[in-house]
Image (cartoon, rainbow, N blue to C red; front, side):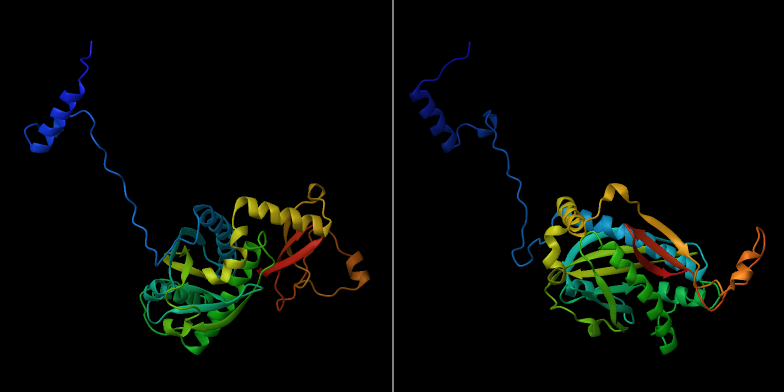
Length: 306
């Protein structure tokens, strides 16, 4: 049976502990230390974990489309994967960029402000070398500014690349992307104040034996108008409203993706068409390219040239 202490005995025990006559380590009530978390009020968290997950899922689609586009254009095995999605200030982003660099400043209508895509110079030189029909190992370690001709070639690749962002963001809004400028110096791409927070999506590009990173920097001020839609529920609500507004019954339609060769097939007379038989060869128009077409409910979108 547990002995019950009187009030005098309790007072005497507390006095002995305070005077040091009795060690307090022997007491059963050990006070646990509170776990503290450091919070910087000058740099608050503006993105939630769910928003980061949605950004990652959306840009995994961008990665697949970009890998397909690069493989078709470069004629070499290419993979693009999302590595991470982080929050950091724009100053931290620009400090991590090499000099010279390959920086594409994007317009994202109807969103305000701009976004930036930064491509590893080694990857840029590998792309340019493959476009010329060469290998991709000699230029991986070169560190110099791109020439005017090389910038023009990268501008075409980046223009095709950022068109995939429209499909990436299609579940959130009808985004129209465009290339505002292509820079080689980080200080020429100051689209927001240095202390502004951004979401940084880092992707790894593997072109043959060359591997490098590509960063997509989305300032918070740019995506703030649609930040609430960057959640599973937000995207579902947006899709349901868009479907209802368009009067589309999604149950009776299927998403299609196919290659359109119409631009590559020469004009033929009706008599020539009637003479066509299985196994006959048609000389295609080499000046035209086939196109990737995405179709849903009768709405067609051309992704990029093959």
